[in-house]
Length: 333
Image 1 (cartoon, one colour):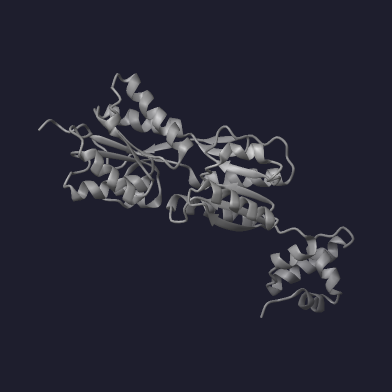
Image 2 (cartoon, rainbow, N blue to C red):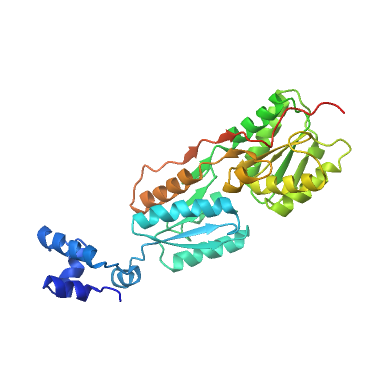
C-alpha cells in the first residue's frame, strides 16, 4: 500500500499540512522539522505524486518531447538520456512521434502547450527555425536538435563527421564513392551531402550524380538504394550512408547480391547505434555522442525554463569509428 502524507504526519506527530510544507521546503517550517520529516519520508518509502502536486501548484513539472519515429534506435537512445536527467530534476516526460510530418509536429507542440508542459524538445524538426517566428503562438521554451541556425539547439558536427568518413574512404583508394541521402532530414542531410561533394572536389574526383541516391533513412530504404546503385553501368566501390539504419539495409542487399564487404564494397554509416557493432561485418560509422546530446538538450531546456539568458547553441564533436565494413580499394578483376 502506498505511503501517504497522512501516514508520515501520524508517525511524526504533526499535521498533514506541516508534512506537505516540509516536503516542499516551505520557509515557515524549521530546518529541524524539515530534516526529520524528510528522513521519515525516505525511511517509510514515500513517493510524491506529480499529478497531485500539479493540481495544487498548477505546475505540471512535465516536459514534452517530439520525435520523428519511435522505431529509430538512435532516437530511442537519445530520449533515454533526456528522461534520466529530467527525472533527476523532478520532471516527467511526455513523448509523441511526428512521423516526419510538419503539420503533425505543430499539432503535437500545440497539444503540449495545452497540457501546460514547462518546455518542449523537438528532435529532427521539420519546422525548425520557423519556431522563432511563432513565439506568440508557442511562448514556452522550444529546444531543437541539429538546427545550427536556431539559438536554442544542440547539434552534432555533421559536416566534420561526414568529411572524415569520405576522406577515410579516399585514403583507402576509393574513387567511386556513393552517397545514400535521406530526403526527410533536410538540414542534416544537406550538411552531409555538402561535405561529401566538397571532399570529392578537393581530391579532384568528379561528382557522379548517379552515385547520389535518395532514400528515407530506413532499413528498407537502404536496401532499395543499394539495388539502385548496383544497377549503375559502373557500380561504386564504397557507399557512405546518411545513417546506420540505411547502412544496415545496404549490407543486407549486398549480401543477397553476393557482394563481399569490404573485399568488393566498403560501407560507412552515421550515428553508431548499438546494432552497428553487431552487424556482419561490424559497421564502420560516424559516432554521434547520443548520451551527451540528450543531456545537453534537457539541460538547455531547463536553463530556459529557469529564465537564464546566457543560453547558447551547442555543437558536439563527431567521431569516425572504423570497423570491418571498410577496406582498401578492390584490386581490378
